[in-house]
Image 1 (cartoon, rainbow, N blue to C red):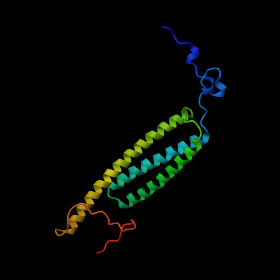
Image 2: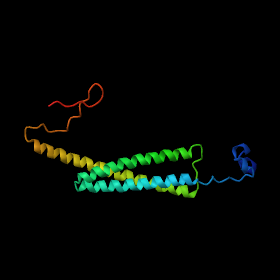
Image 3: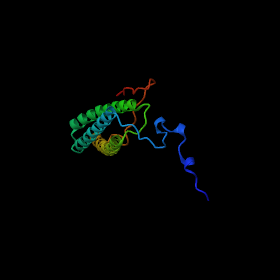
Image 4: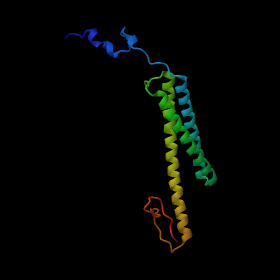
Length: 169
């Protein structure tokens, strides 16, 4: 069995970058300061969102409605801010390769870890909200007395325009 020659194992010249005709692979260009700044900003917003979710969970557990409303408004603003950063980051990366050096890869990994923590905190908050909703439903049934119809609340009626219609009493 013969070994393939080294010539058959090299990249064709037209598939290599123009300055790599020597057969060496060229490393990716260094990340721009703007791309790193955007990733740092995304990481900062995700950390703020995670902290806000934790504060709203504490507010839910202590039944502090004002704190829950305040944190929910903050979370909405942070989500919009994160979407803006992601959009700008995508625009700055348009037409470029996905490689940006060690620092950018490290930041991307940290951002993915922050995202997973935010998703976990959001799932916990969703479960807490469902639990609080069930408790409030039980309290509403207790307030209504024995003449009330017990069961899940009916979905809101929709008008022909698609918007919820006002209920008539």
